[in-house]
Length: 368
Ligand SMILES: Cc1cc2nc3c(=O)[nH]c(=O)nc-3n(C[C@H](O)[C@H](O)[C@H](O)COP(=O)(O)OP(=O)(O)OC[C@H]3O[C@@H](n4cnc5c(N)ncnc54)[C@H](O)[C@@H]3O)c2cc1C
Image (tube, rainbow, N blue to C red; front, side, top):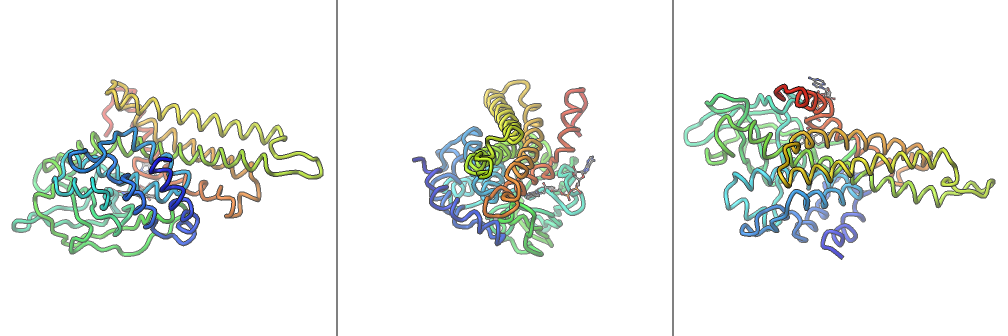
């Protein structure tokens, strides 16, 4: 049994329903994944990690998503943030992440520019030897639980839309105004964070002043988009299997038949399988294109989150229909997938934004 499967079976799965019901951060699951070496998965081996690839991260997020969406989202954001820490962060932090005892996340979305993460309004101002950050971040997965935020701001002095910073979450001047009480992913702790004069050293900058958008688009976004698709595929795979088990186990006693014996129900289940396998195939193709640096890789990464995210909404909706009133109750677990699957559509870049990006890309227009 793999370390991932053991952590899932022994810790993540038993905790998942309560994490959702109580909107509890999945502390024990994240700790178990850290101990299993999976938080350090994508950190270079000479920094104490496993030197894993995007494909390895996809496997982890995909497996977790169908078991505990909240845990999968926390891990997915950690991998997306780790990608830029790996390329631009200090060795000390890379070693911490490699050891699997520290968690990172993305702090891009803001109350003012909302899902338009490419236009932060938060500022970074020189303050003696330090830099002062002021912002109203609207959503940060694992807010107050992660150790490091990859933080976007307007540039200090340079031209450009954005500068990136590596900000310890314990920095004075950062505050979480309230908890997260969401429809789905209820344990992912995606709370707002305010920065009021939070000071970081100038060395906390990831890349040049003003170059943050290029870095976000080229080094963070591919991980985020592909892992978001992996999340959606994982949810679809789990709910398609669970629906099948329900169909074969549920009897219409007066007919001496199961739900699986009903042609309409079977056709709906077939629709679920086809949509799931289609998204999984696109995910596989995207990972291959990114890994081998194919010319169509950027287009695929834009396509795959939108395609898988929307498919997951359709598939989980069909699961609710097929499993009927039984799915409406919590104990079957289908309604949790239904709620969790809805986040991908509105996580930036949202499906609307991605459709515009894909349309721009295939018409030779700039993305932004
Ligand atoms: C569970 C969860 C976890 C999250 N975690 C993080 C995180 O860790 N870090 C982070 O930075 N952010 C995070 N986010 C925030 C996310 O990335 C989005 O920024 C946020 O969901 C956008 O919500 P909003 O209400 O601000 O959307 P709005 O920007 O108000 O958009 C509302 C709707 O309008 C559409 N819309 C907006 N502008 C246009 C346009 N020009 N054309 C067409 N349609 C448009 C959008 O597509 C969307 O459907 C998270 C969100 C969720 C739900």
